[in-house]
Image 1 (cartoon, rainbow, N blue to C red):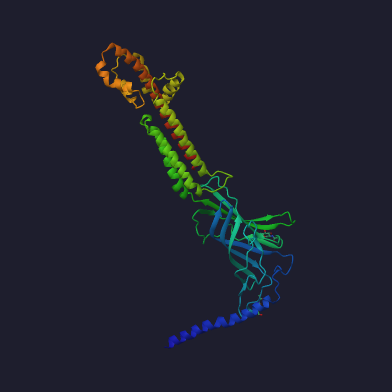
Image 2: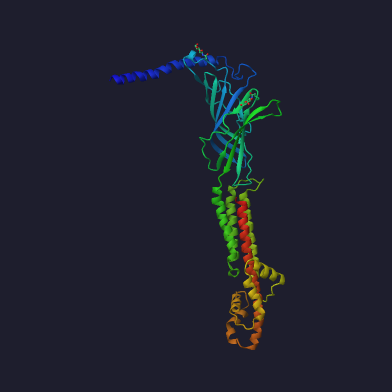
Length: 447
Ligand SMILES: *[C@@H]1O[C@H](CO)[C@@H](O)[C@H](O)[C@H]1NC(C)=O
Ligand SMILES: *[C@@H]1O[C@H](CO)[C@@H](O)[C@H](O)[C@H]1NC(C)=O
């Protein structure tokens, strides 16, 4: 009983003591301090002394970086500290009151503006919060603000781009001799920063700079806050680059489809169509600027060009391969180029030369490989004569007349064979070339 009573008394004492003493003193003190205060004059006793403003800020959140509008919006907690020589009192004489809160619009504040502002507020910092003043005259001013600044965005490396948005703060009317701003920390505080979905903040250094403007001979102090941003490329990699890369790989292996199968041109055309549709869908996600082509756009363009080239090359290969009879022999330069040099380059010379050498030595028609090539030629567009001959050939094998005819046809088949071989070598060469081009495009445009 006794203990609880003494507790109650103690509690009452604690709640009553500071309240009654401080608040009464504070009201009187505040009234006396502000009675003769002119908030439009710098709070210094001698006009020659500068007000030293300590500048600091805590970054809260990046609201937006608009590429097309070239604007940057950010939420910042501003922290300013300065000494007010007119707000000094003796704490012991004023009932122990050693700090006061005053609305920031009631006293002098450094007129700090965002110089590269583009919002309707003209970069002004409105007086919203209260300031805390200690008995030594130290003013602490914390204020949340949203700044919209101009930020030149260079999207040529999109989506692997890094942007630097510089926010330039300074006093609008006071030069360095009157209001001397200096930074407290070399970089903005990021302890309460909310990570952005699109951008990674890699750094936010602050730098003090004395600048002479054309208007006035005295230097002005500006604080440059550099927001170093790096775009998160994962979204673009996952949704745009990966599907496109898969189509590119398919495009390379399209040359592995036999030219005779008739599927090949359709295959390339399908890839081309898929890419064009894909680009249409995704063009909305690319920054709409025309001053520079983003790297991702270049990648798409290169892919479409490669697939287009594959279509063209495929047409040439199919033309070589399905050379309808009566066919001319392979031109000498083409034979040299394809069947000798290119074939050797792609280690196909054994097949190519074998065919080439066997031809004059061959006498009979009993070469199975030869039979096969003729059968391969048995495409619907060949004359019905050929297929008929195919069927009746065994019965006429020993007829002399047929033998001469067959020899002639064999020669023709041999020519056909050479064309086919040339197509095969060209195909392999294209597989390598397109594969190499794909790798180069990926390495150059996706780093
Ligand atoms: C504050 O006032 C008390 C009492 O008048 C005095 O003793 C003390 O020296 C003063 N302090 C300062 C810093 O002037
Ligand atoms: C302003 O402050 C800086 C560093 O805080 C100092 O070097 C400079 O001398 C000051 N200038 C004036 C005019 O007080």
